[in-house]
Length: 146
Image (cartoon, rainbow, N blue to C red; front, side):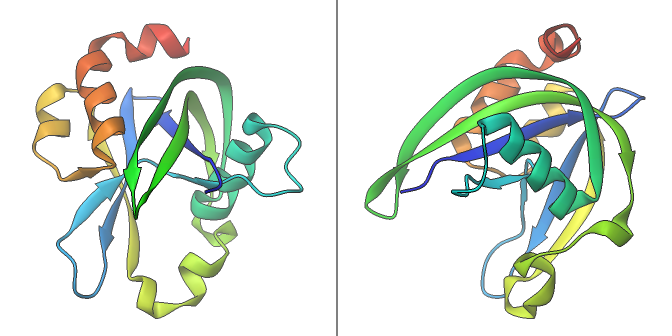
């Protein structure tokens, strides 16, 4: 299974940028933006920049590795490399990729939430391993990211 990256993205008001996902036949959930490493990506950080541009039309700074999490998924082990970063700009017109071209994938709505543990616990944030890391480290994130 290909590894993935996730971007714990903070805006200029110290809010966390999340996706609120509405997928047909599934309960609503939230996720941290990111995606799979592709063969043409030179590094995990390159994957992060590519995915954030595709999914959010975002450019970021202060990219900082935070943690790698692994968990069982569909009979295999999924590995996600989680980075913290600061939002520089975001232009929804630049969003592209299969997430936005295939209606069966549902909605990817951008939501900015205050950086508080209660905001994480109030949402069905997936994967659980990333949600657990965020909940445990929420007060330290601004310092860890820079």
